[in-house]
Length: 474
Image 1: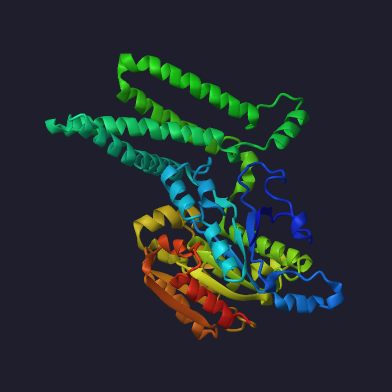
Image 2: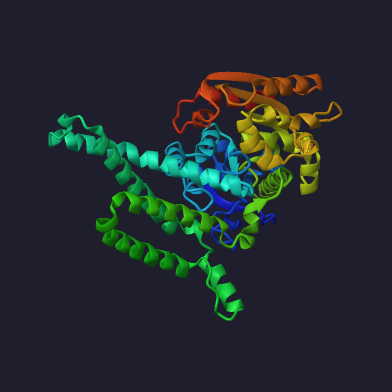
C-alpha cells in the first residue's frame, strides 16, 4: 500500500499527491499539526491509475475502476488525539507514558487506515483542532498522566527489585514496607526522568526552526522562541538539576528529592502546554462546530486531490467513519447540511457513515457526573440549546435526497448510554435512512478500535464494515 503521511489539508489546491505539502514542510506554529491527515491507498489493480493513453480509458471509466474513499475521524472526547495517537501522548498536549505505549503497540490510528487499504479501500485518517482545556481539566489530566506514567514504570521496577531481594535472600525478613517504599521511590524517579527526556527530545514540542528563524529575523534577531535554542537550554537546565539533586540526596534523603523532582516535571509539562498559547491558536478551537467544519475542509481537500489522482480512489463515493467523539463529528457532518455546503462539497458524494461508539444526543452525556464533568461541559458548555444544535439526532430529516446509509456499531462493554444509539437508529429508519445497528460483545469502548487489526485475518468488526460498504455503497 501507499502511505502519504501528515498531508496538510488547509492547503486547498487541486494538485497531485506527489505535490501535496506535508505538515513537516508547511510552516505552522506547532510541530503536531492539528489540520493534517494520513492517506492510505491500496496498490491492487483496481486502485492503480491508468496513465497509458493508448488504451483509450476515459476519466469516468478510470474513476469507476477505483474503490470508494473512507475517511476516518478519531475520538478523544473532543479534547485529545491525533492520527498517530502515540505522538499526542508524548507531546506538550498530554505526556502520558502508559497511554502512549498502548497507542504505539496497537498502532492507533494507522491500524485503521491499513485495515481499510488491506480490504481494497483508500482511507484517510483525519485529525482536527481540539477544544482548549480549562485550568481544572489541565490539572486533572496532569494528575492522571502522572499516576499512569508512574504505574507503567513501577510494575517492572518492583518486579526486578523483588527478584533481586529473593536472590540475595533478604526477603525472608517479611518486612515489606522498605521493599515497597524503595520500589515506589525508584519508579517515581525513573518515570519523571523518562518524561523529561520525552518532552525535551520530541521535535513536535518546538516551533520549526525555519519559522523560528523567520520570526527572529523579523524582530531584529532578538527573539527567544521554542526552537533549537530552547531545546538546548532545557537540556542544560535538566543536567544541572540532576547534579544538584545528587548533591542534596545525602543531606535531605531521596524521598523529598524525588517528590520535588515530580513537581518540577509537572511544572515543565504545564509550562510547555501554556507557552506561546496565542501563537498556537491553530491547535485549538472554541466549539465542536469548528471541529466539524475542519473535518469538512478535509473532505473537500480529499475530493479535490481525487480529481487530479483519478484511479487512486473514487471521490464521488465517500464513506465517513468515526470512533467515539469522531463518530459524533462524522454523523453530524453527514446529517447537518451546513458543514459540507460551507466547505463547497457536493453532499451527494457521501454514500455511507460508520459510527463506532458515538454520542448522538449530546444531552445523554448529562446522565452521569463523570461524563458531564469530563466531556459535556468542557466541549459543549452549559447551553442546552447548543447541546441540541450539535446533536446528530436533531438533524435527521425525511426530506433529504440521496440519504447515506448508516452502520451504527456499539461495543458490548460500553460506557455510553445504550439507549442513545438505539434511539438514533430508530429515528434514522423512521425518516427513510438505511441504518444497520449491531452490538459486538467482545469489545469495550476503547478496545473496539484495536479490532482494526494489522493482520490478514479480518476481525468481526472489519468483516461487518467491509460487508456494509460492499452492500450499501453503490
